[in-house]
Length: 196
Image 1 (cartoon, rainbow, N blue to C red):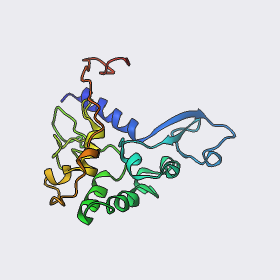
Image 2 (tube, rainbow, N blue to C red):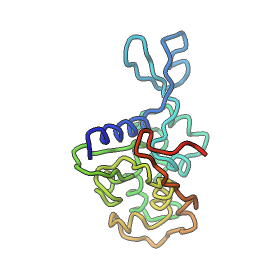
Image 3 (cartoon, one colour):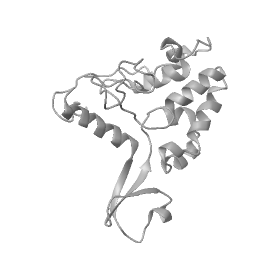
Image 4 (cartoon, one colour):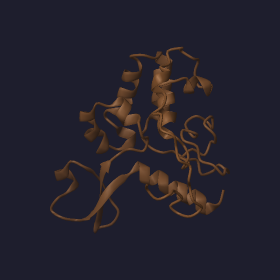
């Protein structure tokens, strides 16, 4: 894996962790807007407006009214998501499954291990010790993150990876969104085809 490729993947991971708008300092401060902020200089403040590093996770576990709390929280200090992953999962899966799922999906950040010498990123690869394809982690362009997430939540992904024993409480009809990925990627940035 080239350094350029690793930097591109790191950039994508960071963008997923902090998606926000940029505005110059003004009378409308982050506190008055109820948003988290990251001051990068005396003239620029970034306002976090969304926290969605792991697609499908917030949508599956959180009540819609709680999304704003999560969007404005730090990924490692989320007041809602961590507890709701476990509480929701306990409704239909074993305690071990719920606790393992909570450990894999929280915090809502894209983790990568830059020490890994690999040519392929793998969604949940870092969290599962490489069981999803590589220990590098991150997210490859052709990773179907929705199906991977749904498989971990409703399917046998965690037991198939050897992380836990199968609780035999899968719901196979909920393990996919039934949308195929069009793998028409390009060799140049931004590496994906133009929208149809």
